[in-house]
Every structure is written in C-alpha cells, then in structure tokens.
Amino acid sequence: MVPAGAVRNGPQPTAVTAYTVSEHCLVKGKMHERQGADGQPYAISFEMRLPKDWNGRFFYQANGGLDGVVQPALGALGGGPLTGALAQGFAVISSDAGHSSGQNPYFGSEPQARQDYGYAAVGKLTPMAKALIQTAYGKLPDRSYIAGCSNGGRHALVAASRYAEQFDGYLAGAPGYRLPNAALAQLWGSSKWNSLAPAGPTVNHPFNPNLKFPDIGAGFTADDRHILARAVLAKCDALDGAADGMVQDVSACQKAFDVQRDVPSCTAGRDGKCLSAVQKNVVAQVFQGGQTTKGEPYYSAFPFDTGVSGNNWATWKFVFSQALDPGALSHVFTSPKRDVKAFDTDYDNLFNGIFAKPPGYSESADETITPVNHAQPLNMKNVQQRGAKIMLYHGVSDPVFSETDTRAWVDRVAKQIPNSANFVRHFPIPGMNHCSAGPAADQFDALTPLVAWVEQGIAPDSITAQVRGAGNAGGVNTELPASWSAQRTRPLCAYPKVAKYMGSGSLENAASFSCQ
Image 1: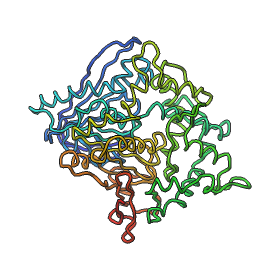
Image 2: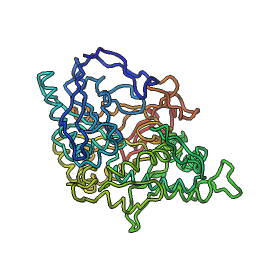
Image 3: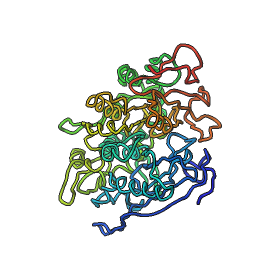
C-alpha cells in the first residue's frame, strides 16, 4: 500500500510538485520471462496502481521513446500536468513493453522483442490487468482507456487498429504512428543541418558524457530560429483575427507563408535579422521532407509555426537525430540489422529496410510498429461500431512527429468512414513542441473530456488549455513571451475548426475565442 501524497512530474530531484494522489495498492510483476534468440533475457515488466477509492475505470499508460523503463503508473499527460488518471481514481498500468533500457536499441533485432514493443505487450498485458482488477475489486472495469504521447500515442493508435474490443477510449498525443519513417526523416534532416554547420564545434551526447557530437545546429542557431518564427508570425498571426503571438489557423498559414519570400534575405552578411540563401534552402527542404531517388517521401512535410524557436525543437533536430535515430534505425525500425551512421548514409536502402521482411522475421518493421492499414484505415470502423472514441492532440511545432501527418490520418479516416467525427477528433496545439513546451498553451486535461464523450456522449468541440507562466503548479515554461499573461488560456479546437477571436474581450482569455 502507498499512502496518499504528492506526485512529482519530470526529472528528479528538480521535479515540480503538481498534484496529490490518494492511497493506492502498488503491484509490480513480470510476464513471459524467456531467453531470446539473441541469448538475452526478456520479460514484459509492469506496475499497476490500484486506488483504494476506485472509479470503476482502467487506464493503460502507454510510454514514450523506445520504452524499456516501467514509468510510474500515474497516467498524466500534457505539459506540466495538474492531474492524471490515478489521481482521478483510475486503476493504471505501465510497462517496459518487453525489454529493459539496457537492451535499447538492440532488442529490435530479436523478432519477438520487437513485436512486443510494436504491439504485443499491450495485447498480453491488458487481459491480465483486467483480471487483476477483478481480483482486487470484485468486478471487471466498467470502462477501459489507453493513452500516451509520442511513442505512447503510437501505442494508442496501434491498439485502436488491433485491439478495438479491449478499450472504450483512445487518447493519442503526438502519435508517432509512422515511427520508422519519422526516424529516417530525422536522420536525413541531420545531414542537411550538418551542411550548414562549421566544422569543429561539438555538443555533449545527452546520455553518455564521454561522447560528443558535431554541433549541427551551429549553422541554424537560436537567433536564426527566432528570425524564422518572427517571419511566420508576421505573415500568419492575424489570420485568426487576433495579433496575439499565436498562429491558430495552421492550414491558412501554410498557404500564406513562403520561407523564400517572407524571411528577410541577407545581402551583405548575416546581421541577426536575416537568413542566407543557403540557410533558407535547407529550411525549405527539411520542412518539406526528403524523398527517395524514385520520388517517394520518406515521411511527411512539417508545418511552419512559431515553436521553431523552442529548445525542444532544437534538441530533437540537432541532438537526438544523432544520438537516437541511427541506433533505432539499425536495430528496430529496419530489417535486417545494420550499422547506420549519421550524415553519409544510403537513405533509399534504409527506406526499403522499413518494409523488408528478410529470413527470420515474420513481419517487416512497418507491419510490427505502425497501425494496421493506417494508409486505408477502414478497420477503424471496428472502433466506431463498438461505440469507442479516439481523441488525438499534437503540437503544431512538433520537431520529430509531424502534426501534418496526424491530420493526414484523420483525413483518411474521414474519407473512408462516414460520420467519422462521431468517434475521431483531433486537437492541434499551436506553438507546442514535442508533447509539451514551446511558446504554447500546453497545460490541459484531455482525459476528462474523453471520458465524458465515451460515457455520456458529450462530443468535445474544444479543450481549454493554459500557458505555464510564473507560479504555475506544474512548472514554469520559460519559453513564453514576456508580453503574455502568466495565466493565458486558449481553446484547443477540434480540427478542422480553428480558434477565432470574437472581436472583443481579453486576448488572454479563452472565452474571447470561439472554434469556427
């Protein structure tokens, strides 16, 4: 038994105390312990937290990255969360998806371990978790939910495609549902950024202090990124009726903004107010996305937005693209295993490896990791017919998983399934980077409206989000413009609607905006 107490979000010991959870029972265990084909020990490790005051609901907490760690089963999402599933009375499970952190990324070369990571761990853990709930409380859960951000969002969409009978609600944040393609786009992009960078400067490896990487962001600095962000604002800020430092009408902005035309060009050297022609060419290429020699896109285009100024944006583009993506593409996201290097790489070969099924593999990486039939998601009818609901949210300035790609999935569902808005809704978050941060209102509770939709039939047209200014209990977002109120709120509107200023009222208050 764990007594009631405060929960700390984020890295210890500097994590901020945001909310408290009630007394609960903590259960830790393992399933399917085995020796892999690579001789390594594997198991699906998990923890469950069962609140003494249970609300009758089950919450599967899908975690991020390459998994490998059993995160505390708190069920909290959004920037600096002020609540979570456990705090709201859910029974919550969290897992490592079938491997340990020390086995990252090498587990991906063991076919069963990769399959557990891709989808099977959810399928194996969920029935066990429900049975454990029945043992603890004397009945099965009334409703079941799965949620996560990043890879956790991928887990949620994969579950919707494979386990429609297991869950009533799916909450997918920044869903990297085409994770192998996104990793390849990151790697390809790193070579473009490297072409701008001067030789010599290095940065520390984020996880190994003994290693250093080339500072590929030195050719597109924080000052340069602010120049781009200001140009986007100048062209797009007022499209929603308010010049407030936020671009709400994302689609209109992509049509209005042109990086070559609208960003000042340097004519006599860089002066902090312009970008060079070479810089603008690389920015245009990376945001558009790379493609094979046959013209097939590696991934998706990225929308222009103000969050390009964010530190999170730079970390994913310039550091993680060197620290994470080569290893993941070597072992997890392509077949067979290989030794991928940054920069000078055969990108076509890597692209083909996503879909390859060599001897020893019953599935390609694409089949294992992405949602079934994501290109033609007719299987989402199973979710609709069951009466289950899918909510998605995504930072428009996400640097690794494109919000444009999430919109494309929602559009494909709408094209193939009539009345899709009665079970799928997507909420873009202007300015937000990967799962949080950036100049954005990134603090919100999406679980409560999902529950209301599933259990009461109240379809969410908007979610109220707040910025994390001075004094915020969930931690201060230091990237907010000084001119914004520390408590600024905005409606996150269900796509394709956007938040429009109604012509009167405070620009700091969500009530002054409507979804149109």
